[in-house]
Image (cartoon, chains in turn yellow, green):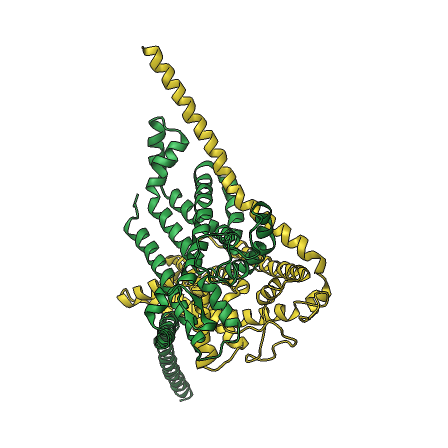
Length: 292
Length: 315
């Protein structure tokens, strides 16, 4: 009787251990799926696009023939757009973060701002496009211009920058702030000369990551009217413009197969710019990260 | 005499300095008062953004509903705005179909990846794999759209021969891949915050790792996991470029994933790129569809926040 029990127990034991081993392999495989897709995606884009990639491709404007088409207008347009986005989003975002972390009183309005920023981060980007269309394009009559696109994108990434800047400001230890107060510095002097310099690496890292999200965004810019065929570079804030993702979208949608290769080449450039931006962010974080 | 004069001069200097200092101080004090006000103005921008979104969606939608009855809009099953048919059901159906496929892909894969990273992988493996997995979340959606159209669809076509170039299946699968890191990352955070003492208690009773995962870790981290899934679904509902490129532009009330469909977001893109004149009914319909989309994602986000606040287990 006892022997029988022990044998049953042993059998069950073996089953449980085997289930454990099998599931471990399954979990590992599931993790690998994501990595495999990533590799496939990079491989696919590289093999499709590399044939059309050349200096001419980078320096050419869009053209009716795939062999002559280039991404110059999109590349420069993206850079100009990012400058506008950076100026507005970083100033407003950092100011908001300082207000919330250093000045905001503990009341319902402050809570409301916090919850509001959290919810804003979850709004689909295309809805920001509709916001930009109503206000920047029509109400302020900027039209389908660089400025309208830049302001729309700045609002889109504002929540990301605010959260990153809040974390950076919060991580400055109160001891060095108190030391500054102890030397007779006022609140703003302490913030401007002690807190902000210490928080700048964190703010920059967050800002670059937010900008790298903005540079790949397509949908809101379609709504606020980024053009698809542009043969001049934007020369003012109120000029027409295009950006890399819009060009890629336009080429992807064309039925002839050659255009897919042109789009692939554009994606290589876009991913290279993204990689560059993220490397700079990591570099800043590693180089200036101070542990207090 | 000379000495007296000099000292008098010194006296004046000191008085001057005190005066100067006082002036400086008032300038400084003024700055101290202006700065918080300026910062508050900047903080108000985010509130104004929300108000702006609500304002524009509501105002233009009301404009739309004076042309098309709200009942027809939400109960109609035919969406062909260029011939005056505004029944939004096919667009909502398209969005839900893509979201459902994406969820079926992302939830199992994301959860299993989270379990692997949090419970099975050692520190070194986790530190390499987690950032790579998060790269998936940073790929521009237009690139995913390209990938879906030129790679995933032809691949599926070799398995399902009558699959069209534009179909809900490829778009849904790729949206799912895009949101895997969201499910995996947030769920892993939730599992990591389950204290080791609970796991060790179970090990002490003779449980295997798998049993610890399913009977201790997952129940303890449930609120965080559910919140991550809800957030990921909300992302899938609002996703635009993948579905615009790969799912087509055929409003189609169907649950057959091999057919071409159109989502709410894809319609907004299509109407915005076409010859939509300002003030026309189609122009207003952009906002009515946009508001429906906004309500969907807002409800999802509020549910996620409610779950993670209400059911958070504190250890």
